[in-house]
Image 1 (cartoon, rainbow, N blue to C red):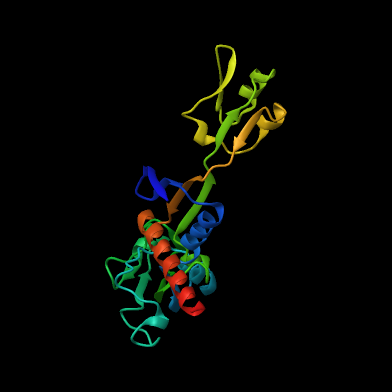
Image 2 (image 1 turned 90 degrees about the vertical axis):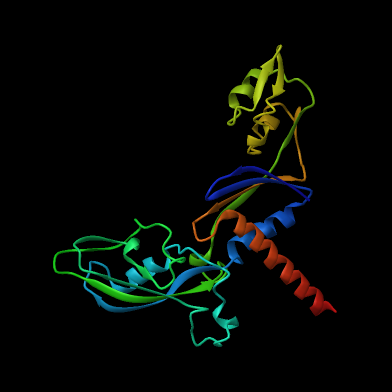
Length: 259
């Protein structure tokens, strides 16, 4: 298996994965979305809430706020030494108290751990009118996207890297150039050709194949372009490496069960 980084930004990673098949790539994608743990608010205790939203609605919104996650500092509640009773190693305590008129933002949430706080400070929670206030305490724990999407670390998708082969120069070559949604084809010296710089942009719509009666062929390859867009709890590289670690651990456990 070969990996080539195509783009590496703060919250978005794109890389080329070569030497694998669809089954492995899709399994890796699913593990990134559903098996990589992050912190999310699980319990909320309201002391005061006379805002425009019911307790249940505010609690739901709090659960969907991405929280920066330090995987080295926290354990799953079921695996913690406290045996699920709750401690600083498996629970993150947060609180908020506001009487200011206007929107209440995620930046007003106070965390017991300075490293783990809301990713987006300007995310609105509710809105207060004059003489209204809100006060609550919340508990965030580690979880995985398979249990609830609030624990999913990001949006992960892939596409097969296409290999376009022109078997015979078609008569309607101009139409092929015009109809391609990604502008991959071009005319060179009166012949249809593929722009190599744009070939990877192909979305495999197969319109060119239909237009030319199979004179153009989209060859299957063992190359896949992976995109990992983090929602901020973890950086994209951590999402990928953690997913592979979880995948390997489960394979090893399965091997032991077989023996």
